[in-house]
Length: 376
Image (cartoon, one colour):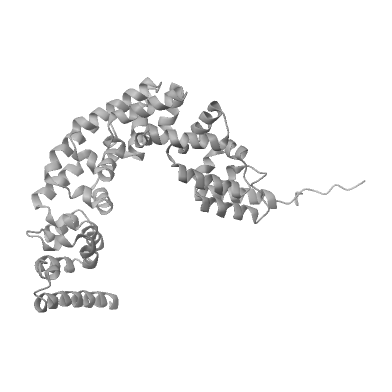
């Protein structure tokens, strides 16, 4: 109860302060231009206006606005007060959307969301994706229909709409062209028809922005890699591992990083191709990043031969490598002579490997429950 009273008093004082500023400082343009009705309505919703002013202050000077309508829409879908406040703080432009526009968006999104609760969860994380321009509505609808014809999971479609709204705001034909290019590439490289949908879903989930790239980028990058000696089967493995990140690359950047890495590792073309297949990160890390990580590993006493055997260690930052090496050395494990596999993986993976290794090292040399052998 005391907390509620304190919060209410705080909001009252903030509102009073703004009102005083409006009355006593008429020549202050930044405050004077604010829509007092908007400010008051947002305060009633416990919105932190300092955050709004810092990034999107211009919204507070607009008219007309639909604060109560936006809040009512979210509340009717089950959003709590704090969630509504959070949404309006992250994306205050929501109050500029007309009520009919909001309702149209709700109807559209519910065609790919399992429940209103799921939709509220999406809006909380990606409010700008929901409260979008009305001019995008037709494109959004056409794209939803198109992705449904691909028999993609509804959850996948809603995730795409939330994380990469630009893909749904543009004409459907552009997405169709890229999807068809991806499908054809996958099959031409030897991918199985019955696995195509699963492969496409994984690719779009892990890198939804792949749709925003021109199909020519994918073709150019694959041509470059083929010229480097990669077979169709190997290119398919890379495309599956990179999950579409191959569209973020370009031949010139890959040429620089591959040249540097191969020269540093002092290996043959065939050996280096195998390294890349194990660790595609060598394709997209810049030369400065690679140089920093190579130096960090070498400083720790790790040899190039060890890196060749476990190239994925290059995916770890120098700070993470140093921390893990120190933790392993605390009970006698020397990475200079042991396998680097124990360094790899996520934090959870490392902790599990570390625990198993430590348990193995500390296990008694004899079985305490086994019967002792005695001479007759």
